[in-house]
Image (cartoon, rainbow, N blue to C red; front, side, top):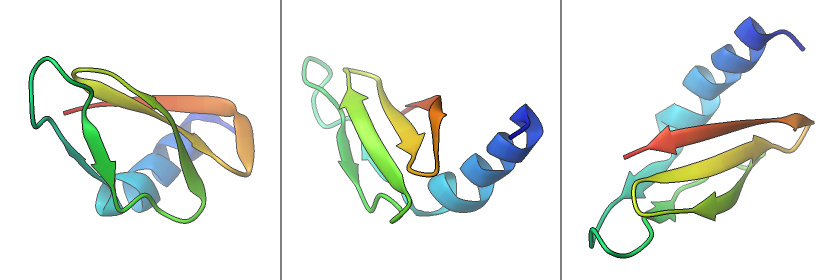
Length: 64
């Protein structure tokens, strides 16, 4: 998979559906509505990290 193809998946699948909110600046973000083919690997105070289940060598960090 090329980087451009992966960016396309991020834009077309992940970012259109996922909800990431910072409810408290001292606590990890809250993630909801993760698309079926994506998995949230972890969260921090300002971002969440996701992996596509078919492309496990690639991850993306999405900031609130």
